[in-house]
Length: 154
Image (cartoon, one colour):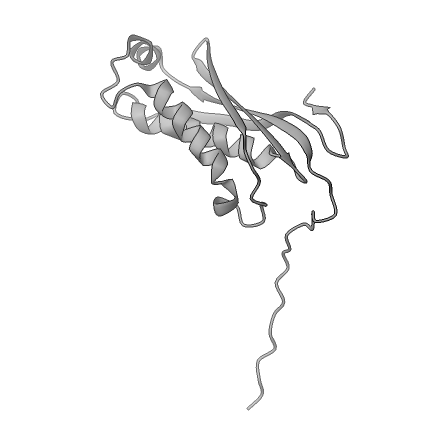
């Protein structure tokens, strides 16, 4: 009986061991499309589960710290700063997450994860009011630091 050939994994974590730790910042954004009634309920603080934005902020901060546990090839990095902001723009709630680190690799994935989980938290808390909430356009706005310097979405 022939031994089965072992298939090699086609993935690898980037080797950042030779890169110096530098201050790096990333900003990610995500938006939710909400009905006027849902937005009004959030603004009035009448959502049955409680304070939507405070809960979403905490969820986003916690998620940024756990990114390496969720995304297989992400490096665990120290996260000394996370800020989540929200703004109403018409029928949209725009969430922005900013993450800073001093590490040999950037916090882009941590910022994206923070924005996404904050948006999912808003959905979870508001689904009793509106099931049709759409989470849209999760994207990196900017990054700075490291060898490649600053990048900004046009």
